[in-house]
Image 1 (cartoon, rainbow, N blue to C red):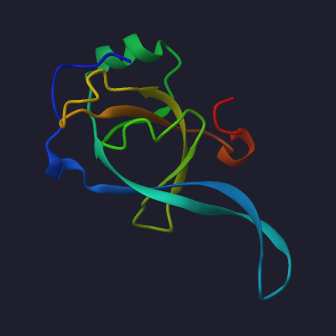
Image 2 (image 1 turned 90 degrees about the vertical axis):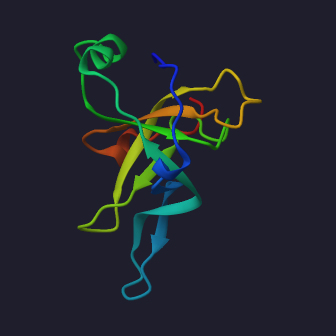
Length: 132
């Protein structure tokens, strides 16, 4: 992913996302197991905007519902992790981490990783184990 030489101000980290996985959880009212998102940990993200020409260079003609975020959690996020972003209407939407662009200068306090989140049809069915 193309990375511009710009830094993200601390105040822009305003989206708290949950990282987790889909697990079968038994409903206490009827005893039926259903797949639910179970959070492992939370991170703060900052929306990262790129030009449409950069988007085309990165993804080609196969554009999907992608969102790019910056995170200060260097090295903690891996490909194929399941991320739930907050939503005003319900408890959130699940996305899959499809790309991680790691910071080169990890010693720099302003360094950040860029992650690309993709939402498609049937996120639960396309979810794979981390690192595959």
